Amino acid sequence: ALMYQSAHSAAESQAEHEAIVDALEAGDQRALRRLMQAHLGNVESNLRLKPRLHDDLKAVLKT
Image 1: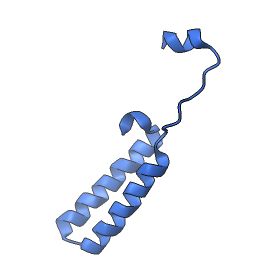
Image 2 (image 1 turned 30 degrees about the horizontal axis):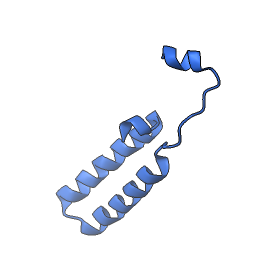
Image 3 (image 1 turned 90 degrees about the horizontal axis):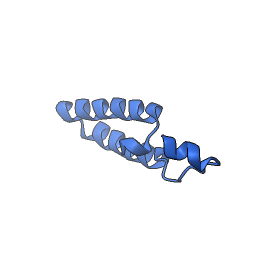
């Protein structure tokens, strides 16, 4: 999913992963369920799946 995330979303995702691992290690199933639901919701809402429109095709092809 990284190629479809902004840098901000990727940083948030990393923090969410760390919290999920902490809940796993602590055996806290309630926290784990809550964190996973929030994380998956954030991933779904933050994915940038719509193609960006570019006016200048020549500039796009140079990148």
